[in-house]
Image 1 (cartoon, rainbow, N blue to C red):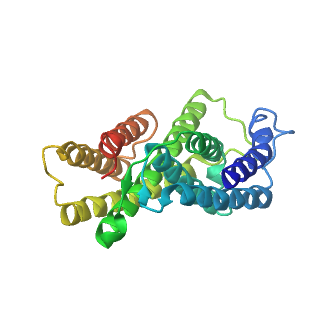
Image 2: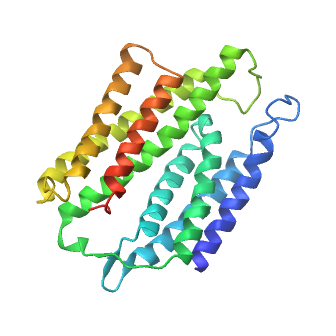
Length: 262
């Protein structure tokens, strides 16, 4: 509980640095980029305590406690870690960071107060552990990519409506698009590896009680492949990209959490 509380405080501290700048987007004189070093420092502290809190809840004497609340908190810390580590280099991450840190706060609060037990023994199979790790990391990257798709859609609409204000916080549209493509491409590569390792290490991967996971996951892989191809060859952006991103993450969510992870 202490680690969760410290992480929540650090997340709130980081948000207090970010929110005032993003709340004054239309005021060019008042809008300035948040202090990157301060937000990065607080973010890394939050991620560290978040990880410690998740580790204490996840690793128990009998094995690994994969309750839904613990899994969501684990995915949340992965997203927070990626977004925070990208902060010094990617100016485009300011908008997603607000949702990422807010999600971290909510996931920690839920995991701290919701108790349950869903014990697994992943240490008995290194292959299964590897499969689960890349599946969770792939999902975390896809969630972050979805936040970028929302940002891309918003910026595209602002440009078309000619209501865009030039200031230090708003990132260039093409840069957001490039970062979004990079995130989706890496996540798609990990999803491909997830499907391959699932067929190798999960002996019941295509069993009737598990086949829905395979179907939803393959469906998501197909949707993301079409999206990436459309962006690369046809220069898709805006609403179409957002729809594909939402559809893909929904299928992955149904596949991963329909009846637990594995």
